[in-house]
Picture 1 (cartoon, protein in one colour):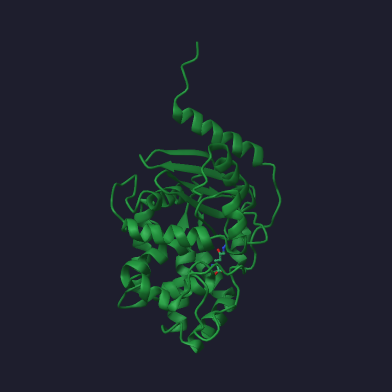
Picture 2 (cartoon, rainbow, N blue to C red):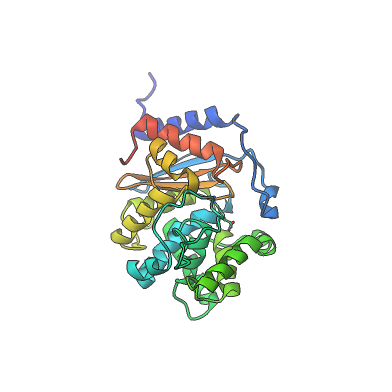
Length: 311
Ligand code: DON
C-alpha cells in the first residue's frame, strides 16, 4: 500500500497540476522595449509557494534567475517608508490606483505627484526617498533590503542594467517632468541610475515567494527568522500592492485573484496572502498590462481552488 500523502505532497502536486495545464499556453509576448529582456527563453515557467513556517513548495523553473523589474517597487517602497515615514513619502507620491499603464505620464494636476508608488513615475520618486549619503550607498541599502526579504545575497544583471540605461528615455522624461513639477527633488541622473539598478536585480521564483512570504509574515523572513521591517510597514505595502500593484488590471486582478500582488516585465509576479504565505511566479510572456500571462492565470487558479481571496 502506498504511504499516505503528506500535506506537502498535496500542495506540490497541485502546483504541478497548475504548471502542467498552463505550460502549453503561449499567449502574450516577451518584453522587448528593454532589448536585453527579449533574449530570454519564453518557455520558462516556475511556481513557488512559501509558507510562514519557511517551507517552500515548487514546480517548474523556480531556480532560474530573471530581473525583478517592477516587482522591486513594493520592497523599495518599504525602505522609503521606514526611512521617511508614511506622511513624508505620501507628500511626494499619491496612494490612488491610476487605471493607467505602468509607464503612464499622468501626474496629479497642481502638485505633479505621481499617482502611486507602483507605477514607474511613483517608483522613481520612492527610490529617490531612500536614505543614503551617496547614490552608491542608496543602492547598497536597496540591495541589502531586497536581499533581506529574499533571505540570501542578491546581485545585479549588468547587461540588463546597461540595456535599461540605453532604452530608458521614457523614464528619464518622466523624471524630468516630476523635477519640473517639484515632486522629484533629487538629481534625475543619479535617481534613474539607482532605479534601473534596482530593476536589474536578479531573483528566482523561489526568491520572490520568500519575499512575498516575508511581507505576509509581518516583516519577519520565514527562512532566516530575521526581522526585515515592521508589521505596520508590511500592512502599508500590501495595501498599495492590492490597490495599485497590477496597474490598469488592478481591479480585475483583485476580483479574480484576491491577493496583494506585483508584476514585473521580465515575467515575475509576487503575491502575498497576509498571515498565510507568499507566492512567486515566473514566465516571460506578458499580457497588455505588462504582467506574465501564465503567472496571472496560475495565481488565479490557486486562489480560487484554495479560497485564498483576502476579501
Ligand atoms: O522602468 C521600466 O520600464 C522597467 N524597468 C520596469 C517596468 C515593469 O516591470 C512594469 N511592470 N510590469
